[in-house]
Image (tube, rainbow, N blue to C red):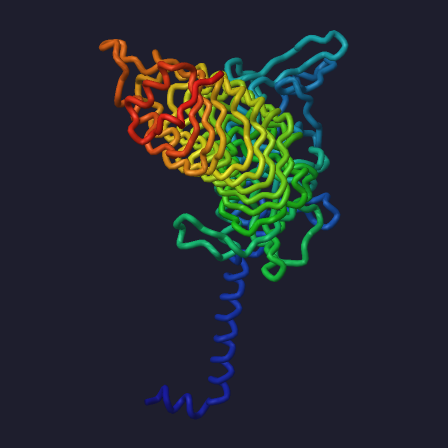
Length: 500
């Protein structure tokens, strides 16, 4: 009761005290919120101030970076002309200490960063003293110093001009996450709110929400919802793609343009599978890219709608599989005649479900390809020439042309070395538009079972199963004609013609 009476007697004083208490709580809440808020600075690995000469401390949400500092024994310098070298690179002397001139991940092992520390005489070109982890020298040490503890990092290192993106799948996830169009983490995401990705050095007039670089120099994602533009803003002159860049732009269904594409460097990429899958890019030129380290391109243009695709004389010395590479692609002209395929062994489903007005593949190197299963399955391709295809290594060709809209097939140079293993099933099933089929390279002996010395009925039947009844089949000789007619009831005598 006394407490209540005290409140009544000192109402004004208690009111002021209460309001001050509320203010303190709100202020602390704001400080706490500001400390942990996810504004654009929170995501930086290292953020430059306005004159680009000083690094602002990054938040705890970022990955930390460091620089290698070396302490040198004074004995190295006494009466010597000593130049400090680590792993054959010179150090920078700064404030009576020696620093390596590159930024290193804070979690890096010092032994990996710098194994050998050497005092080198430039005049005699000899090593005077050496420190490493096997030969300990008194007072010589190496340590990683957090770059946030160095006032002016650019007195030690050169300002970086390049950076490296995180893994393709991770960048793709962040793009979709910002666009707010993904389905609870389940594929397909079907992003329909991004029409342009703009890789730029000019800071956009929209909020930049996250950094997707794994290197020291940041790359921000900045989303303009009204214009449907996803900016990739960086001060780097060049962006190295991660060696795992698969699915980088996958499922950005309404993506029509990638501006600043020339800022992307592909030289470190090993996996670019499904990179442009499920997009609607108007034009793309890969002809001058360095893809010499790439090993995986499966599904690269899976379900891609593209007006102009330039591949030129693209070199892919480490690629062995083109599986699904153009599966579902929609384009007018696709020229692969200069594409490097000399080491490719798999072309399964390469053009499955594709819609192409003209396909240039007559000069494609297929000498090592053993798998062409479903290569043209359900493909709607107006014009293409297989007459020069080398199929001497071909082992699997099941359903190769099944459901395709092809009208004419010249397979007169095809070899079928593994036909009797029944791995050429249903090649021409339901090719209802097929009017002319030249298989004059096929011999009667191709179908003969080695054990019984008789034609293998099952193999013949499966080879021609569900073929268009109206197709004209060009064969090598009378024996081949009789073989087909004896085993395939659905093919008419008048439709099998011996090549002249």
